[in-house]
Figure 1: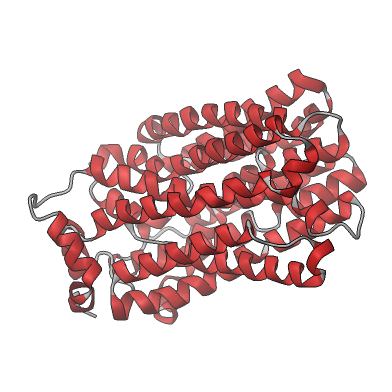
Figure 2: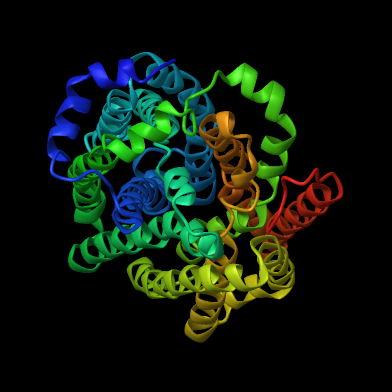
Length: 443
């Protein structure tokens, strides 16, 4: 399909008028758009994730004990990861027929509406099982929207990167995860610290969800500012970032998609082992204040930001594949002893979180670039989206659920088994990609 559909949309015309004074967008400007977009997505993600621990077990699932309520909450949490690939399919069609501006607008408004609507949910005491159903539907809406929020900006950034700076530019989109967590954790910590438990559970928890819609609107304009530039349109027209048909993409790029989905599983498993799972463990099995732990999490996430930045420098020196393999090995070692630190008071928790976020930053910083950059040009846009969807589904969708099950029924050290499985999957995927390489897989 040509770019005519994209050109004909009012959003695209408005975007071009904004950009009429310049003909080229610098990589630094693309990077800002990428960071803003990813931060908004992860903010929505973490607002829901934190509420899954602190709010939903008592508010939505009060008819079971706290542990079971949290597990049910995590089961609903996983629905978004199943819906995300379907969202990619639906919004790829929108992209092909109505343009990227229209796709992004619909997807981000769906994400914002689905997230802010959670704030208006009645309690189980008021609406019974209808509340559970509504929560599940809104979570599915978030997943569909996240599938549609794929804008190709990360690919555009990679295509504009100098050859000796590929690792540096690959890490830029990943900064959105710790930044989104810092903002979400700080908001919840503020309300939890300044409200009584009854007020927080009644209305205080709703405010972070209200913020999500406003943040998504800002992110939408930041991203439309980029996707309607002449440079981006040129790449679209030359089929560098053309949305190809999913069946065709899977048929020709299936091996790359599978390897690309499993290569980052170590970082995706670690992602929840230092965000959602430790919060659930501290809240359920210790006497520590959850607000206090959210502050620890925010500070540790700042170390994660620094580690992601460091991953860019390291990857350009030693290669992305080497860094991802080494960090997967370090995560495997971490899984064997670290979870028990969560039972060792302040020092243990702080050590677990900071070391965990440093390892996460080093691995997650390069997790999207090691294989995705090797798609054939015509399939890069759709192939990268599908790879991301599958990786999140297998690496993160059930991570908090199974980690909590293992820890609750077999001891805290057992939670490391999930993390170990992700590390092994990464090492195997990297080995297979190297063994089957045809010249397209490189550092």
